Image 1 (cartoon, rainbow, N blue to C red):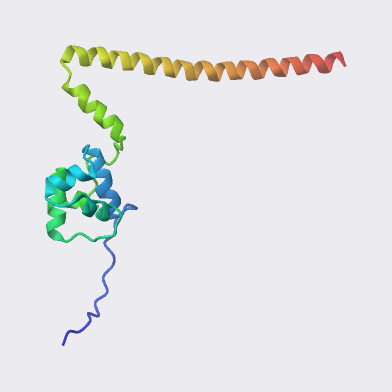
Image 2 (cartoon, one colour; image 1 turned 180 degrees about the vertical axis):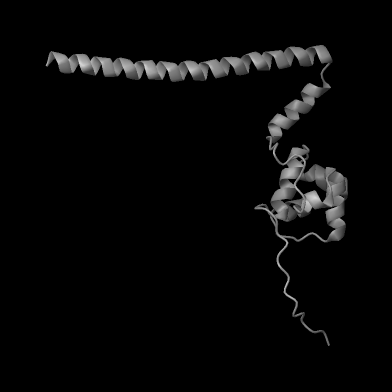
Length: 152
């Protein structure tokens, strides 16, 4: 007859992400859809969805399959070890575009990156100009109210 263990173990949960959230983030970071990841590891899309929604708990073989497909260690997948890319949480749209940029010839990449740099500098200037304009307009309003008070 089986006896219940009296050994009380501390939970191994690390961080704020659940397994499903980590799996979803890693999948998106690698640019896979649920369907593409499912096909890569030999399961159906619905199972990937259920793992990501934390409806299913992965057993050891599935953890290994997911980690191999996503090219991460099992420790990274389980949250035991910080993922190498954890600080880089980029959107899937941005990742797809970056992959397309990497496929361009070097001279086209350079042109595109220069264009992006120019745009970003302009956006920074616009923010600076908007802040300065706001400050100037506030100052002008203050000056006008001072003049109005002096006339009264």
